Length: 75
View 1 (cartoon, rainbow, N blue to C red):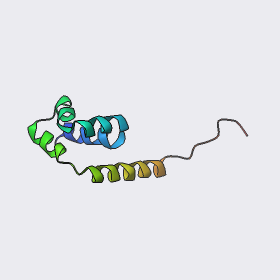
View 2 (cartoon, helix red, strand yellow; view 1 turned 135 degrees about the horizontal axis):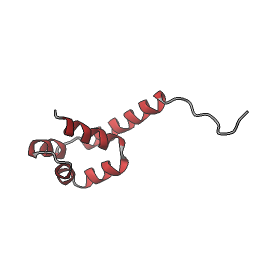
View 3 (cartoon, helix red, strand yellow; view 1 turned 120 degrees about the vertical axis):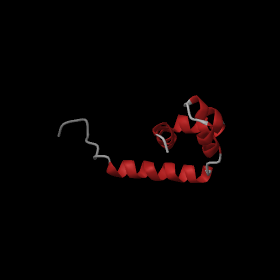
View 4 (cartoon, rainbow, N blue to C red; view 1 turned 60 degrees about the horizontal axis):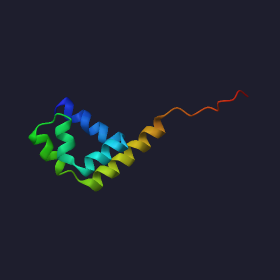
């Protein structure tokens, strides 16, 4: 797997707008990202349910790993 393909996957896992564009036109979005025919084919065949499940899982992991938010006012 090349770096451009990995970056594209990371983007669709973390960016809702990019994911929406991808789901509308997987091959077109992959081509616009500079990915080749093999990568475009692989992405066109993606398991959409699995993609959404993975997206939610990654979001939950990021939220759990984030430092707690502090109140903006002093105590």
